[in-house]
Image 1 (cartoon, each protein chain N blue to C red):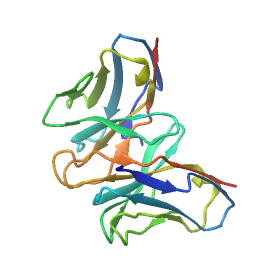
Image 2 (cartoon, rainbow over the protein chains, first blue to last red):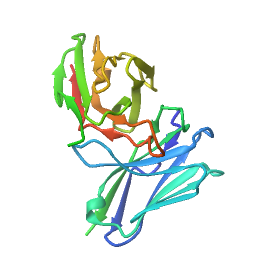
Image 3 (cartoon, rainbow over the protein chains, first blue to last red):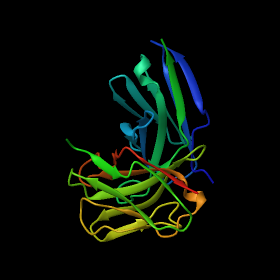
Length: 113
Length: 115
């Protein structure tokens, strides 16, 4: 059973517009969430994270929103740039002291110039 | 340069022939982990280690072994590989102190094919 789901395998967005990537989870014990970006032939790189004590975390063009009651998080990229084209994975863990991570299946973002 | 290295990057082998994929990090990180990436399944955690001589199972440990005899190294061992272990493997490391301890640094990946 997939505890972390990214239901959109792919997304295309025009350069300069907003990209919204979604992630749903089923385990109510998850309280720390991360987004990673992956380019072809490279390992994933960390993008942004959020703890369950927050509902929003911002880092430059990237903002992650967490809705605990809906068990849903989203990554907003504004404005989108062609270099953002990559596969994005969300990941979840049960927080401090727990070192297991569950990743979603990924969403391939294509930003069109 | 701070990095996680994996060797080999590509490997084609046959069923049953024992193999080891090495992973090394130069950031003095306590935490290390192995993942496999498969189409439609995303990244799945195989094993992880919080420090030397401390390892634990992730979500898909069957058919794999690990060891952590030194802080910098975390080899992944397939004692009797099978075709269903054909996959892209990533090693990752992370510090365990501070707010961002969960951020993992990934290696470049090892593409394994088992015939």
